[in-house]
Amino acid sequence: MTLSPQPLSADKIQRAISTKRLGKKIHCFKTIPSTNLEAQSLAKKGAAEGGIVIAEEQTQGKGRLERGWVSPPHLNLYLSVILRPKLPPSLAPQITLMSAVAIADTVQSFLPFQPEIKWPNDILVGGKKIAGVLTESSCEPDRIVFVVVGIGINLNFPRDLMPESIKETATSVLILTQKPVDRGAFTCRLIQSLDQCYGELESGGFASIAQRWDSFFRLRGKSVRVEMPDRRVSGRVVGIDTDGALILAGEGGVRERIVAGDVFPMIDSD
Ligand code: BT5
Image (cartoon, rainbow, N blue to C red; front, side, top):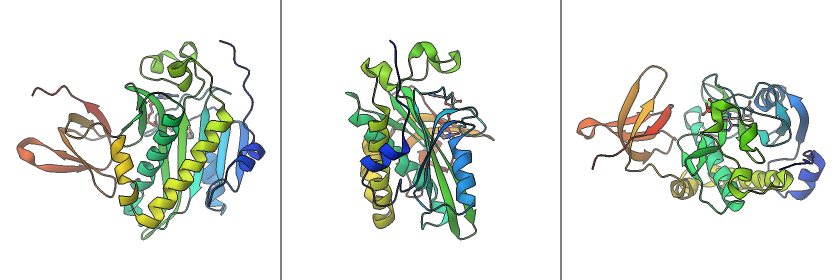
């Protein structure tokens, strides 16, 4: 399949969206190391809430824990948003959950399949990763100064251009629908959805998005193994807490709250 991608245009996106807070300033780049790094640097210089950085290509796209995000040019979406939420630092993980809901909503509107949120930051379709979120915060002891929400979504990424490292585990809208997606339209819809979910989170707290989060969450009641940098635990998923922690029931029903880690489903024996 040949693709002649239209570059993403800040002007066009700005004209097409109607948002309360997000996207009043949009910066589109051809090639930069990472939209998160760029957004952090803008935020440190005082950029207002809602500023967005988009790149056609990232040369050092970042995942969590020093992992990378494969970011070839012109095919996908690499976007970072600057937020200044009025939340205590302990509730910063809610921003990741809120963003995952907005991404899943948007992905769902472009696909005939239901996406799944894999706690905390992966969006999967058919068990394969289509999007990831990297949330990086700058906090003072009692307040969040800013949060940068970095979102990578595979749109027109054909399997034959994926490196071996992700070929078996990743998917894209193109792979799932056999049709290229209009990246501009997708980007507008995502910004719109983020703006709405963020507004709901700020005015109604986590409860206002919890039900939608739950509708994309398939691991409740399932047995999982969670790997953290310093240890691993296993148990049955009870749900998520209002601060975004994953709640597991371990051996003997002892509950454990996991704040960060990678979740791997296990085959249930019963
Ligand atoms: C994430 O980390 O999933 C967060 C990814 C966030 C990327 C965006 S792009 C815009 C913004 N600017 C940045 O620099 N970053 C953000 P994590 O859960 O650690 O997953 C990383 C893992 O996902 C890698 O180790 C690979 O296994 C896999 N992976 C890498 N690139 C991928 C891709 N394009 N599609 C699917 N899986 C990928």
